[in-house]
Image (cartoon, rainbow, N blue to C red; front, side, top):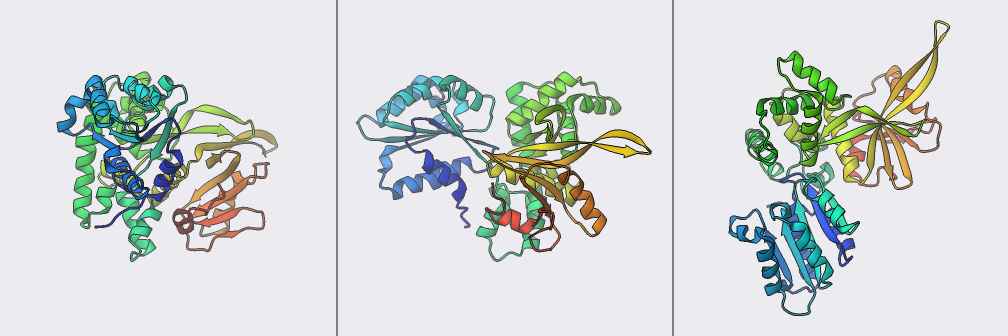
Length: 417
């Protein structure tokens, strides 16, 4: 059976060992959080000479561990397993299932012999609470589904064309990737969306307007890469014969964001150096789940590529916004203000780059169209066009980097960020 090394995340965990913080591994359900901690990281600890009885692993989703969802029972259990002065590693899966989990984590944090790692599938109940409770002593590591680079490493025999086709259709959830039959992948993704992701949100937030919430997911899935906002989405409901106000739409979008199903890219005025606010763009964390939600009916490669690029930038720890460049042009003797869009403004510390996603640039006019907004940015940060055309990565005379999609997705250092 194939093993995914997930070295990017293992390295992050190794860097954070014994840092006197709660390590919070968050991300989409079924994206590999438990495997990362309980297999890959535990193997690292064992290789470093840590005794197996100094590693306390508890899966709170497991029915046999249901009593441990009581915080005091959990604390007693951990204490009984660690009644000496050795260093212990505590790994708690889906910790949000335990009531008052913040108090337990805080207690463990104060006892220096515990190095604590937790996973969770909901940001509102986990990251926000922990970071607030511990005032900066909660250290989040966000995990994403498998990247194409990780698939390329695990399946070196597959061609780029086959990898791209499979990934852009079925995404990177580990269980799906390991399936060999396409009908099985399709069925599993649809079932997973319905019985795991959708059911989890409906149950957790006690949503009554189930049909409307389901429709909202479809609207967002259909509009990846398009600017939208709660009011626009609410108006779409009106045209479909539903009644859902913008406030409720905004609340429902928050639930999707908290569950890590989607991410939000806000608009940023590059020249004015400020956020513009609504509207914004939404992208799916796993493109396979998005496609399955729409019964694989809307698989335009331009949109799929944009979504995959966005998620890959997040995986590389970039903060990603949608860029806007305000320009003034003369039209028939009159000055007019115009807003040009930059697909992605990427920041990582003091580093920045501007990216346009262009599936194909078959002509000089198309190249100029993609360059239009980039060339209006008056700073020295890197400007990039990522294209699926099979042209080699190269730098143009104007300094813009034409980056082949294959190079971007398979080479970690393809962007200096």
